[in-house]
Image (cartoon, rainbow over all chains, first blue to last red; front, side, top):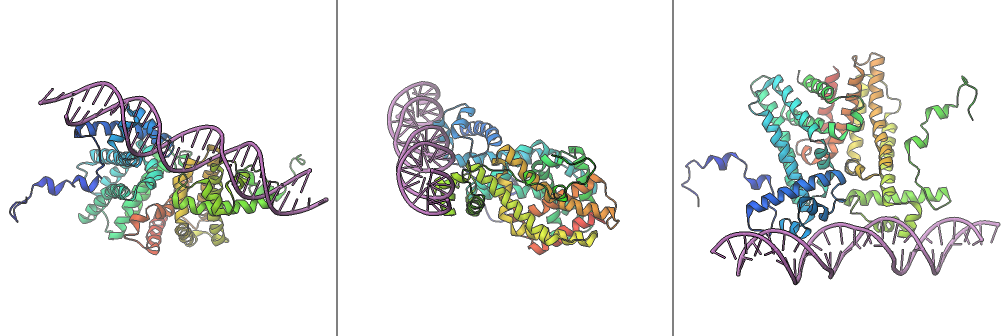
Length: 226
Length: 226
DNA sequence: ATTATCTATAGATCTATAGATAATGC
DNA sequence: ATTATCTATAGATCTATAGATAATGC
């Protein structure tokens, strides 16, 4: 039931994006929600390792159940299909990524210095999560269409962090003026150049340490803004 | 048997990379090499479509044989395993990519204009081969290790096209001086920004046409060189 | 009589579920 | 008696090969 129109609605509802926007509900046979959360954490922890190591198709549901510490029958009380497990894993990876970023980027100012710092933080997090980012690139395609929507939306939220930073910098004149499309593209470029360190490591590592990679890429990006 | 030291060795051997460096030999039961080439072309044509559409793991060897126009038994006279088919497909994609690029980039000069033109050509080719590039990103991991080596080497050859262009531009002073590592990184960045159009299309297409994408990315890249 | 192709299937999986069992709380 | 878990397996694949058949060239 809604309150009288015009009255202020609870802040919570307005600010925090509802879970339904950022996560897809996966049906379960088990009633206790806390147990569901705990078991699914076990499933995700086990599956992340197996998927990253062997790939989605070569890891079996039996292995996942075993690594999670229960039987195959129990696994299927908490998910409807193997693809549900894939979705849970992709979601967990993105949440972890976002958590790490927001933790280190809170109360960030604007301007060139802030952007430089944000790029460094982001690239370091990409390095820490190399295997997981690579996995997302390789297996997003195996998700059912509606799960995929949520995973791609998460990717846009991460790009959005850089868009905000650029937008705010332009708004308060701490960065040079940029067209809307330039902001959009630069934000996506930054996101991708972080990923690049993960999916081109086999080649980049011949010539660059992470520190060097960050330094030189950051110089290129800031060069565009100068 | 080698000739006398100091004498010039055949140009062919020096210039054209031997097939053994760019391609892995796949064993076959069939004697006639021309027939092998023709059948493998059929296999690749059929498999490319199926793999790109359904992914490597969901396409079956039966389907591939059928789409190629012969039976499953015949398929296995021309390859030893399904992974051999994957390798042939990856190789065909890279050869097609390189063919298209070299065709359009022959007799290219140096300097900013030449680089701008090369970027445009490359991005257009990436657009034409979107599905195939995406497929390489997703399924290279499914290759046996030694096949993977060849596929990654091909990727480096394509990056090498841009490295050459930058190197020559720096050497003849038509570009500003660049450190070796800057050339390496810029070349990789260009390669990846072309791929980005394929693996971020779902997001980029909301704001950019291909022409716009090329124009703005190119401006960023050339901005770094100014 | 050699080479290429086809049919039929062995053998090995793997996902998902049905029905039996154990644990929990009243 | 309700909830969670386990065991056992149905059912559906899918890769790769063995052995039979057809085509080719001498």
